[in-house]
Image (cartoon, rainbow, N blue to C red; front, side, top):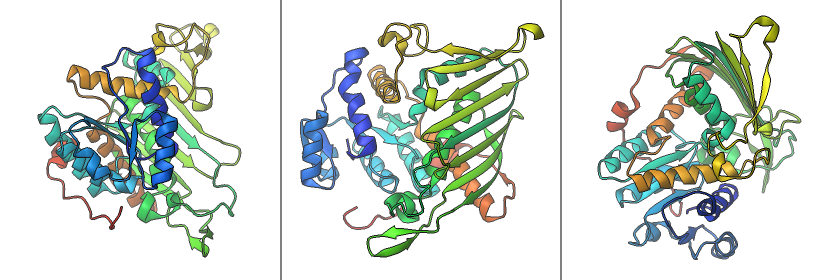
Length: 388
């Protein structure tokens, strides 16, 4: 695994625990990779890795390494993933797929080539593994909501509310790619695609940066990414989705709210209450209609046969355990895991369209593409700085 900070900690927890609860192929946590020798060594010991290294290139060349889990910042994803796939390693990479559309296209092309040789790859949209959202997808696929008319998705956080919050790599375009757009809108957009199973054909959007400068090591630094973004998505089915994301939404810690409205029913979800799913069946007589809360903790619900007795709720960290479980199962079965790099490329195209629309004063951007086709003709990845 490459990277041991926030995401590295979450992924390590999943790797350490998955075989205790799910029947997965046997594996070893061999090597944790990071830039700081002392820091990565301490993290490896704490998180259950057998050894540590500061050289990811040497690690993917090793014959005893078969899976590479990329938890490094987005600007490093393309170089590492493409090299690992070329070396015959199965690859899991955190979202978003990359910082630029060109990098994402190159990664999708590399994944297609590797897949032909039995090498699998997956992007880590972990909220697909929230049992309540997996149940929502089942209900939609079963036709319980009928034809979907519109969706509201709002992913709101407040960790940048204070304009004196210090500058970080997440606030620089050259390292983060974008701000709230790539960081959390990627999750919201992926949920629209995951739940509805459709294709986005039109996009309009707006982005805004509320704090244009933040304290840096040598004085104020310019913030070159967005603090918040808004988008309207039209799907091929005719459904309309509104997406709102912010990292300056006072009082909102990590709230991904989803509302899905169909002709025969509706669904409500909030990540901060991730064990609950609101469901309304509009086919009932009007006098009986109303949202009911489903506590998604039954063994019949997705993933939950492996955990606790009914009513004993699970948490955010379990989504990563489910993600690793599905990835290992796909590798063991020789099947293609989901979401694929092509799925990540689809999200990346929509994010790029939001930025294009925002730059053109919210004009409508048409999307008509085949990710697999376009990925096959993708350009080479961009060059990275020495020592990246």
